[in-house]
Image (tube, rainbow, N blue to C red; front, side, top):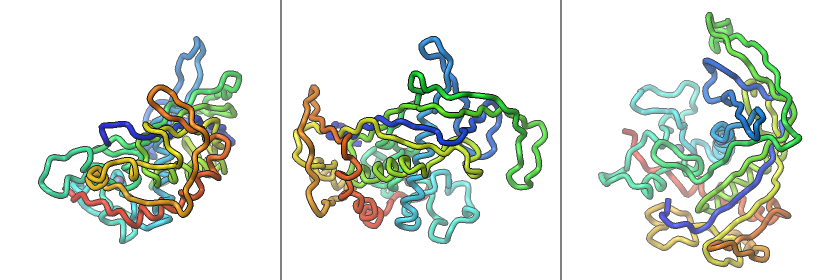
Length: 314
Ligand SMILES: [Zn+2]
C-alpha cells in the first residue's frame, strides 16, 4: 500500500484477562484459529505470552461482527474459497458469494498490483490482510508486565467432536490455564484511512468494555479481557493541524487506484501540540483519544456503504 509513508497510529495496549484464559497446548485444535501454546524465555525466565497473530485474529473477527452489524455482507468470509464450490452452511443469502478477498483475482486482465488488491479488498482485508495483501494493522506479541505475570496451570483435555458432542478417540490435548496477569502489546495502523482510525477506536472501546474474549472456551464465557490504552500517538510525514487520513494526504491518482474514500467529519478534529521525531511529526492523543476521535466514528458506516469489493471469484 503506497510505497511511501504518510501517516501512522501507534497504540500501546495493556490486556488484562478478567477470567481464566484457556490455551490449548499440543496437538489438534478442533475449533479453528486459536491461541497457540506459548511460552518463551525472556530475561532468563519462562513466561507465557499472547501471540500477536492470535490477537490479530480475535480483533479481526470482532471487527467483522461490527462491520456486518453496520451493513450486512459488507466484509468477506476470509476462508470461503470459490474453487471448493458449494455455499456456506448457515450463511445468510446476502453472504452466499462473500468469497474471501484472498481468493479473488483482479477484475480485469491486468497484473495484480498491491494497489489493485487494496482497491478490491473488503474493509476487514484492508485492515487485517488477506492472501493477496498484508493489511494495514499489525499487533505484536503481548508479554506480561514485570511483576504482573499470570499464574499458569495445566489441565488435560479430551477432544470433543463438534457435531456429535462425543469424545474423539486418540485426541488428547493439554490445556494451559492462565489466570490474572497484565500483558502489554503494540498496535500499529500504517497509512490509515479515517474509517480505519474509526474502526480502531471501536475495537479499543470494546476492549475497554470487556466485550472481547481470547483463547479457547470463549463460547462458554471464558477468556474475557479488559484492554487499557497506555499511549496513543498519531504521526505524519508533514505537520498537520487536524486529523487527516491518506484519503486526504494521497494524490488524486493514488486516491483513484487504491480506492480511497474522501470523507470529512462534520467538525474539524484538531491535533494537540506537535513533537518532532526525526522525519515524523507526532501528536500524543493519550489523554483524550476516545473523545477527540469521536467525530470519526460515522466514517466506518459511510465506507461500508460506499465501497464494494470488485474482485471476481476465480
Ligand atoms: Zn475481505
